[in-house]
Image (cartoon, rainbow, N blue to C red):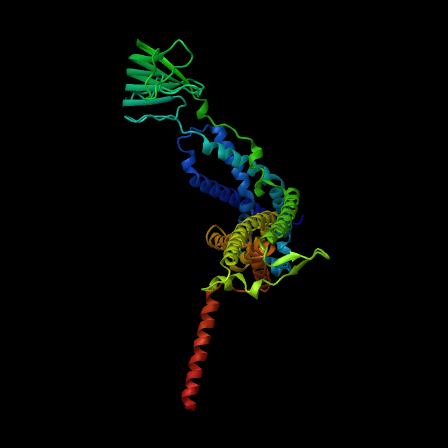
Amino acid sequence: MKKIDKLVLGSFWGPFILTLGVVIFIFLMRLLMFYIDDFVSKDLDLATFGRLLFYFALLTIPTALPLAVLLSSLMTFGNLGEFFELTALKSAGISLTRAMRPLLIVAVGISAFSFWFNNSVSPWANLKGYSLLYDIKTAKATLSLKEGIFYNDLPGYSIKVDQKVKTAKESTTGDLLKGLVIYKHPTNGMETGNREIILADSGRMYTDKDRTYLVFELFNGNDYQEYSGNSTVSYASNGSPAKGAEFVRNGFKDYRLVISLESFGIKRTDENQFEYHEYMKDLKQLSTLTDSLQKDYKNTSQSVANTAKQYYNYQFKLNSANNLPKQVPVKDGKWVDSVLNKQKIAQPELAQTAYSQAQNILSYATSNVTYLNEKEKNVWKYQLETHHKFTQAISVFVMFLIGAPMGAIIKKGGFGLPVLVSIVFFIFLYVLTLTGDKYAKEGLLWVPIGAWMANLVLFPVGLFLMQRARHDSRLFDKDIYVIAWERLKRKWAARKEQKVAVG
């Protein structure tokens, strides 16, 4: 490796790693802000939260790589131009394309890594991340009692507290609760009504060390139970217990009620439930599923067309000679709409039958058109994801073609102007990608065109900037445009004087 290659690569890797980390952090903050309501009051442990951030950090890498390459390459050649190192290289007979060659090889390598990452790591991270996020969203919030309101999220219990008295923060026995009412509901589905009611003057609520059980330590109260010799208690039609049921009251000074918190934990669902999504598939699986969906769409379309023939009883019938449909003229040669528009109909039964047939075929066609459209859109989604395995990788190379020559043109390094220019181009790439995806999913654009639209638009821009940079263009110098504007004004003034003189 030559010294010039070491110089360029040494200037590139620092900004690249820093930019990649910053972009991943920004996307993770976006995730947290989007799902903040699902995380609040779920009492997530650090291991679960760390796994979630790790999975989604992996998911942001393919999106962050184009911006990181754009900004780092722009800063690299911007710094070289700002400190006249590019000028020294050119004076030594080294062209700009030769100076860009090591970064060109690096950009191709990052593009190949992006493709491998999209095809192998992203489906796994999508499956793990979104399944864990679903489990967090469906988990119950931590127990939070409010004064004067029944809390019903504990299975089998309804709890009300009249007053909560805060205790010292270092206390391990929880806040002091006054005026507790606890209803115990049957959970086996065989019994009805409230079988047990606990009233207590005061008490405390806390969890054990493993946070698997909730403990209510109650003071000075009574436990009212409905008792029967049988395993179940019968009730009258008005809801009151039938004859033979007995009530038992037990007074206590200190009573502990232990309740399992199993329902508040995060229950992991089967990840196979999420594998149907196109984001969870690699290239081979997407190709197989796309072929299957296309065959299913074709077979469904043919089935719909064959079934629709039964609605045309008055228009076609089979020819007994060759079993082919032949057209049979309708009486008086009138179509259904013209028959229905007549004020006087000679045969109202025929018109009513035709009208009914027309309604049936309209309903059948409407429902099946919607059904087929959804099937076709599903095919487009899988095709679009297949193309994105390649487009996100190619966008890394396209961003290099824009960033490197632009840095050589503007000759500014650091995090000032390069950051602004990079963000503008990245937003442009992002908007074009979203627009192309939207049009492709709606069938307004051919799927390959929608998927590749961003790269097709920005690739010529990169080639144009490369051509300008090779010729030392002053594309972004304000003086050029000021001089051009002054020349245009002088020409306009001279032309007006010429017209006045001729006139």
